[in-house]
Amino acid sequence: MTDGFNNPTPQFGTAEYVGSPGGDHCQYCHQPIAGIYYRLNGAMACPSCAEKMRGELAKDTHAAFVRALLFGIGAAVAGMILYAVFEIATGLIIGYVSLAVGWMVGTAMMKGSNGVGGRRYQIAAVLLTYAAVSTAAIPIWIHYAGKQSQAHQQTQRDVEEGQSDSGQQNPEPAPRRTAPRMSLGGWLLRAALLGLASPFLEVWHGGPSFGWLIGLVILFVGLRIAARITAGKPLQVYGPFRDSPQP
Image 1 (cartoon, helix red, strand yellow):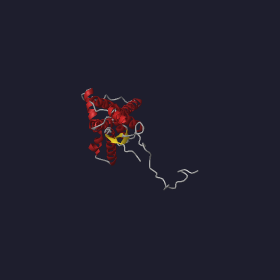
Image 2 (image 1 turned 180 degrees about the vertical axis):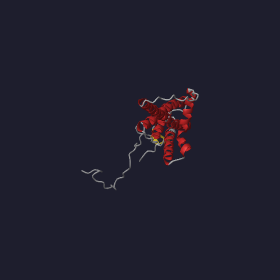
Image 3 (image 1 turned 90 degrees about the vertical axis):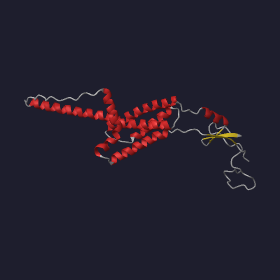
Image 4 (image 1 turned 45 degrees about the vertical axis):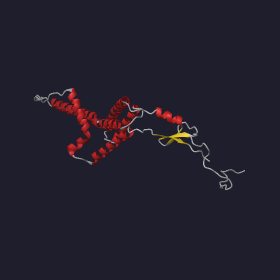
C-alpha cells in the first residue's frame, strides 16, 4: 500500500488542486470563511470579527490623552530615578539607559490610552523622555555636592584637631559675607532649567567631545523609540469581498 508521502511521483491520470474548497479561515476566530470576508490590516476576517473589531477600536478622546499623559509622567519619573540611581550606584555615565527610558514612557502612554496613538502622543512622549533623561542630572549633582561638602567638613575638623594637639590657638574666623538665601521655588526652577540644559552644558563649558556626541546620538535614539511606540497602529478595514469558490 502506498500513499502520497511514500510515493511522491506525480499522478498524471487525475487532477490535483492546491488546497480544498472552503479552505480560507478567519485569522481571528479561526472559523472557515464562506462567501463574504474582510481584510483587517491585510489579515482575512469574517464579517462578525470585522464588525467586532470596528466596535472595539479605541477612540482618540481628551480623556484618553489625559490618561496617557498621567501614565507617561509616572514612567518619566521612574525613568529619571532609574537613570540617576544607576549612575550614582555604579559611578558610570551610560547613555544607553535613555533607551530604556524612551521605551518605558512610550509603553506607559500607550497603556494609558488603551492603544491610541498619534502626533500629539508622540510629541508628549518625546518631551517626557527628554525631561526624564536630562533632569536625572539634578539628583546626581545633589549627591556629589553632598559628598564634597562632607569631605570639606572632615578636612576642616582634621585641621582644627591638629592645631589643638600642637597647642596652637585657633584664630578667630574672619566674618564671611553670606549671600541672600534663595526661596525653595526659585531653587527648584533654577535646578529644573539647569537639568533640562544638562545635555548641552558640557559643550558650553569645554566644547564638544566624542563621548558627548555619542551620548547625544543615544539620547536621540531613545526619543525616537518613544515616538515610534506612541505612533499607534490604526486598524484599517477593507471590504467586503466575496470569496470565490475553489475548484
